[in-house]
Amino acid sequence: MTVVVEDIFTETRKTVKQYKAKCKDLNQQESELRAELVSLQAEHTANLMSQETATLSERIYLNIQAKGLVDKVQVINAMLEEVEEKRTDLKLETVSLLQGALTKDARVKSQYDTNEIVDTHLYQMFMELTEIGKQMQSQYRAIAPEVLEIFEDPKVSESFTATQLRFDSDSYRMPYWQANKTVVHREDIRWACGGHMPPNIRKPQKEVKLND
Image 1 (cartoon, helix red, strand yellow):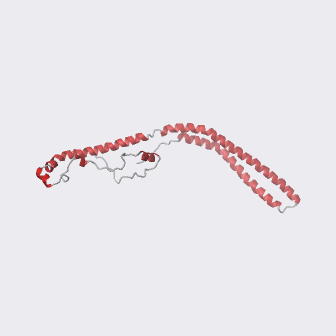
Image 2: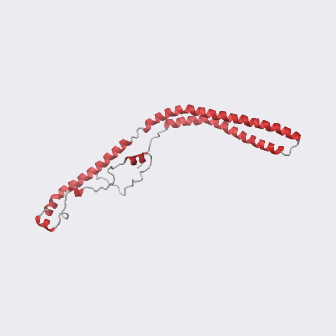
Image 3: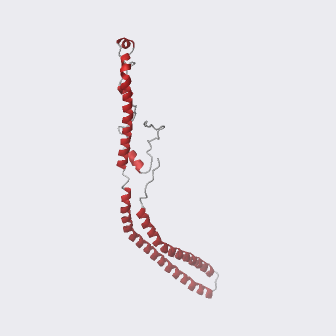
């Protein structure tokens, strides 16, 4: 059985797409700032290594250079914080848009009514069971008089036990064995609604079909 579910997140996808488009510039800024930060950290490491073998005058210059690098790092870190703040503000603005989109999308989801589907298939199942039972009972009633004429003969009754001569309509119903009193358990429906086949449900080996 193939079931195609209509997209239940149409409006939500649009909102997320708009959010990601607005995030694109922020992501680019963050990427460039972090790349610059890595470069500055590499320069700072090289500077510290150079100071180990530098002369006094060279160390003065290198210290001035190192201070400049540290100042740049602080500026970049502050800019990264600003980018993160802008991203947070964007998320906060998007929440209300998402809530509206999810509300609209919920109307699409609501068209898939579990109770309606269960009731429909239960009705179809009982219609099928009723039809098979009706035909079996009809066939029983057609042959019963002739069989009972033989079974109920006094001489026959003397030669066989009541069990051997049993021929009643109850014996010609479809057999059914089920530990639970209910045909469909609520938990099984919940499993199915979550996209999982209930663990105690097995595919029947053969499908019974009504004659046309």
